[in-house]
Image (tube, rainbow, N blue to C red; front, side, top):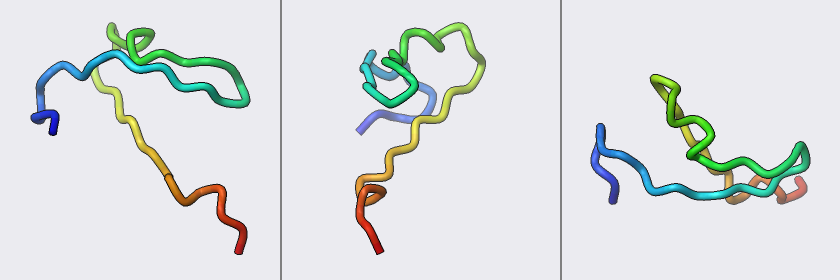
Length: 43
């Protein structure tokens, strides 16, 4: 578990708009990473 306020490890995300890396946002004051593991389920 990563503690609040600590630096997160760099990770890469492949998505439809392109590939994003957490390190791309390191100069931002706040970054929120949200995952939706069940987002691909049809209803």
